[in-house]
Image: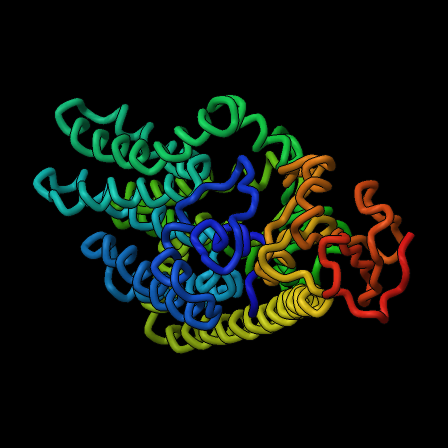
Length: 456
């Protein structure tokens, strides 16, 4: 797949292929820095995907490694398999998006904290806790706060002699990861409160809003469900989503009976707080939002499934193994069917953006250049141009500024075929391309072919 809308924003911050796109308030620069070793010198999407696929696999391995000694290896292996075969994990692991890395940080951080609490001399666990917290805050500071609320509550409530080092590691990690985002808030957004308010506005206004139905609708393979309309997907596509909390509850029962309640209760608590903003506080849905939730549930669910196939009576064990195996096979079939639909839909839209970018080049809009209008941001990135918007969430300039730029720089204003051009593009040369009108500024000059569709 080519790069998506959000990916184009993140990659453009470190890429030499196109100017940096407008960076809105909710975003953080962690994922841009993560891909900088590749994106800063290569425009190859394939190379970037391979790099992230390998890195995401290594991240999952290290996160599970933090749980060694807390659960049997077979449980950890199954947990990794369960998480790694979700369609949303496979889709976003190689994508330039931060949510997967918040999930990895959450999974590793909870495991490291449990190890640090069990062994006060385990310095590796303390370093792992700080690094995991920094990774989460580096990628999405607000998500890091939600994930770590139970960890902070636990450390505040434990006995004082066991509290200082893990608490200091956790707070230091969060502060290290978030400091850049906080400094940028004061430099570019008018302060931390202003940035948070702006981020809330862009996300539709955070507040009490039950989005469970929206998340269910997105499970059919929609990478963004905004507005989230339509019917709930077929039962076979969403059954796994309802099975997760039931299996997690069974995992907690197994943990209580085995005398390791904290090891299961803590990831369940963090999963719950991580899901709150995306299930109850936002007016739309994207499956990637719940990746931390899925990662943290993976170990309790794996523990429950392992219990089902190993503790039943010897005569019934083959039946239990067969039923679980059949359920897992059906689950995998569903996940990869949805994955195929998600990839097909995403690839089609990204192919359209690349086609529009090629048409812009044909019309003479080549770097250095500017593109504005609907979907201008990803199209501009594909074309190697700067993107500019005069309104909306990505507003970064004014009409007067675009007109000044258009006098000397090739500039294109995109519009739906049924819409009138923007006021500043009135009088520019108009070209029809698919469902778009491409209005080209006079600065393109001789590069414009003669077969254009006249001007306004």
